[in-house]
Length: 124
Image (cartoon, helix red, strand yellow):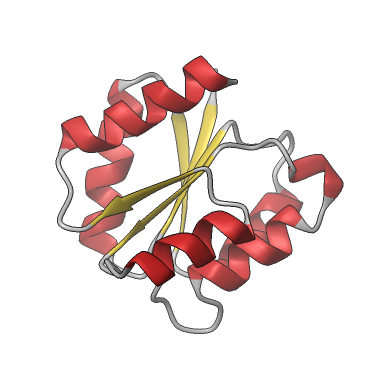
């Protein structure tokens, strides 16, 4: 089974994204911030096949998470989607340069998230 991780400090957003991914057949783990997510990745067997991460979170934000995560060679090819309220083109550019594969702006639709996941699976 494909494993996905949802990283967001908003519990309702985590629940919505988890439901979507579960319907797609993913086994989903959740983290409330980037630090918690890095710890979870280290403790979990196997590598996630997809990560959705928010930008604005306490302790370690999404951009910092992406930079730390991508710095590890074994995670260089894990598809990563930034899901955030940050809508400025400069933020999109920063996220993509840091290693995000796609960018979804909140509020999002199920279709928008699914479209990004499908686009990435066709590229990979």
